[in-house]
Image (cartoon, rainbow, N blue to C red; front, side, top):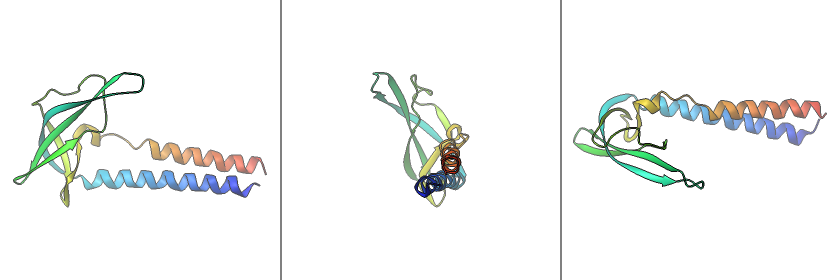
Length: 128
């Protein structure tokens, strides 16, 4: 068995597990609900010249104003400027926030990386 390939596979599995745990921890931390307001759309062009729109949402925790910059971009704006949206924030660090719709997302990248790492490990045993 080629130990290098095996170690690479184990490393990839560990990275996938770490990414999944970080995602879950981040989702659990944003547990307090408030209402945010879409203030504007940021537009970004991809290398293929397609336009993607990202919402900026402001929200208040107490008397302090915060800004949430949505990380998911879409080819058409998903919400209108001025629209009110449910938003979760971390009570220990109110700067950390997630839109309710984004909080429902499932961790995809971490489990995919774990499966890829497992396939590398299986491959290492086949070349042994």
